[in-house]
Length: 179
Image (tube, rainbow, N blue to C red; front, side):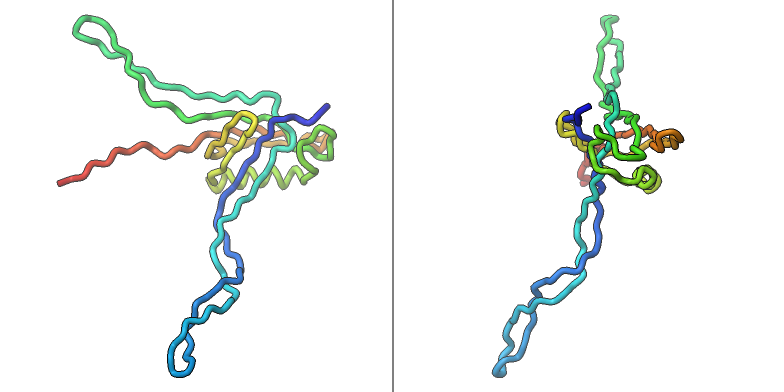
């Protein structure tokens, strides 16, 4: 069985502190005058970091669902006018397993399946926003994990899981300036 061309990546974006060597401006007195001198110092700075997880075994199917609301309005001529409503967020389930040992068809190297399951469970508990990337389908969705179920398979030591990903969008708000 060959490796698939479709990959699913989960990216967690967060800010962390890191010690960096930073160029700092200092004023020193030289020959009775103050002069600006640049000195390198170690400083703790906030840095944007990304943690990426790749699904090791891809699901057999990946059904995306999205819907739009429609509303029928009666007119004077006893006809109906259909008005389009809001478009719902993208939602899709992922059903697969984290391998208990190295398989030939695995997309990634071996990683402890319990650690992977706990990572996804923690993302759900913390309500973390994840960037879900599926490059082959040209999809990059900011979403969160709405449902995550996992269980241990005794014979193969695999962890079977099901998760529901739901797109997170900012609401469209129109502002009006009050006079």
